[in-house]
Image (cartoon, rainbow, N blue to C red; front, top):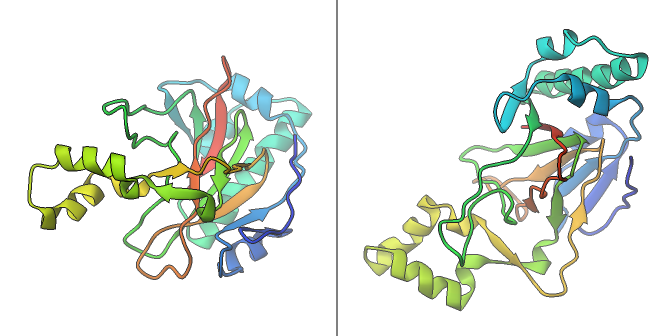
Length: 232
């Protein structure tokens, strides 16, 4: 279930929640992993939850109401504890049972859905936290291995054809439509899968950010399998 990570230019591996939230991003390091080997039966929880839409938010009350085996109870307590830790820290965690995200296939040369490598942006200082308990896990990639799609000449030309306005307004057009958040990997890029059970903190693009935001993407889901994902 667990994937082994080591400290690198991009990733800092920590062993406590306190270190996860209090370690500062710096240099090329824009992803922090609270590395964990979780016990418990998360598959049982997924099997007993009800998917109402492609993305269904699961409340703590929903979890508590489940009739579970001993291993299922262990998994539930881990999730509830993660929700408590993040809430007490001041974050707003959401637990999602996920079949799939909405896809953006309007243009064949650029996509703005979460399956595309992208960064998160916020008007205030914040971070993205996520943990996949079950199902396919997300990927990140080093900023040096990716390029903003809007800087790629052939894509930029096509975007300018979409823009009905002056050159001065073009950059605003790119931001308003989130085109500037999406990245294309270099040919030799090696994405890193975030694995199951680890709680990650990823750098976000915001006015006070001191590092580059973390480039990441949602995975293509495994056939016939839901994901159980904590995110905020």
